[in-house]
Image 1 (cartoon, rainbow, N blue to C red):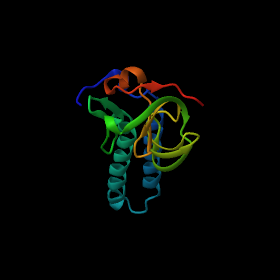
Image 2 (cartoon, one colour):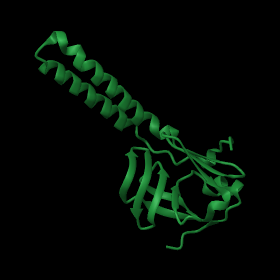
Image 3 (tube, rainbow, N blue to C red):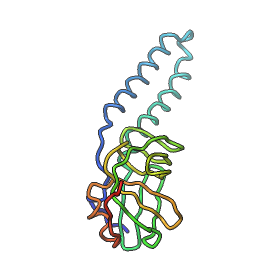
Amino acid sequence: MNRRNKACEPEPVGGLGFVLALALTLTLAGVALAVLALDWNELWWLLLPMLVGDALLVYFVWAAPSRLGYQVGMSGLRIRTFAGTREVKRGNVKAARKVSYRLGIRLYGTELPGYNVGRFRNKLGTVQAFVRAKRGPGVLLELTSDEKLLINPCDPERCLEPLGIELKEATS
């Protein structure tokens, strides 16, 4: 399952502007805190942890979208996220269909520009989403456990072809 296929990469979504705005906001907050500090000699105890935390937050917001991806092999589909991977065995997929989705209400998970991973409730029902865009074309995988997974590869047919899963058109 180590094969990387460009057709399986999620649709790209811009998010660099958000990362830059976040970094600028956090920097300005640090400067404002420094100006308001009463004891300049003790300022570094306050600023150092804040700057490290800010840097980690900016890194997460910047790096998370690039970690999201899909790898397909003969045995199944591997979904990569920032926190780890999820394996979907070929035999566990009942059906796959093209859909036009809108994420809807987030029940839990992470929503960042270009990184939407978690459980959402929308017109498709309750779905476990691994997508970059909040809306658009995608693929709904219905599993034998009655769970629904939503992914958005660049080319769904070529991406799911190695699995031997027939991709149906949406009926609704």
